[in-house]
Length: 82
Image (spheres, rainbow, N blue to C red):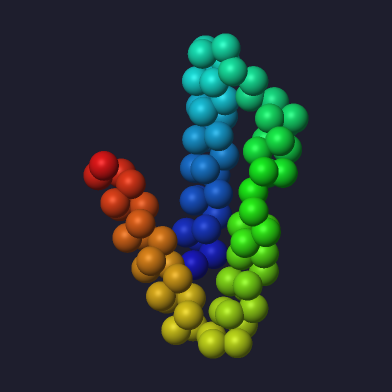
C-alpha cells in the first residue's frame, strides 16, 4: 500500500502541474490564492470528510480500507470512461 500511495502521490502532483498550465493557457489564475478561494467555498462536509475517513478506518480496520479503496477505484474508472 505504501508503494502504491507513494507513486500515486507523485502522479497526482504532475496532474496538478499540468492542470495549472491548462488554466494559464485559458487566462485563468492557477495560483495559491485560487486554490484557497475554492477550498473556502467547500461545505463543512468536505472539510470534515478526511477526518471521518481516518477515524472510520481506525475503528473498523482493514475491511474499511479495502472497501474505501475499492470505492475510489470504481469511481475513478467511471470518471475516466465518461
